[in-house]
Length: 111
Image 1 (spheres, rainbow, N blue to C red):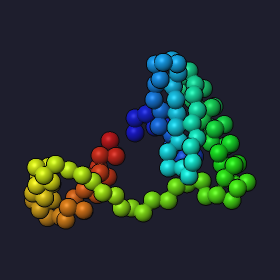
Image 2: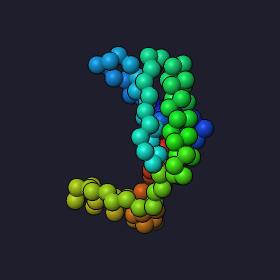
Image 3: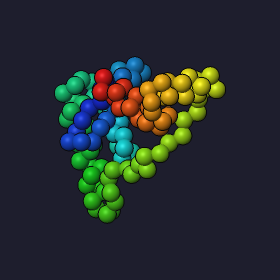
């Protein structure tokens, strides 16, 4: 995935902040906030690992699970026309809307 760094299974999304002329990394899927800044890739790796280690140490000290739990359910709002198109596409593929969307999203994340 573009703009994502992996730190031993913990994912951070990277964005460039033109106001400070630095890259900002933010860990996602955590039970709290953890971010970091650096001017280059090497710095992102270093600062990201420091930030993650600090977060994990705090979780361990407080007895908190570091990773956020997800139920596997979420609501999606579509326009009525898009909803109708999804119904047609799913039926044409011989799938439920749910399975069609799961397959579509899984394929999209592989690229």
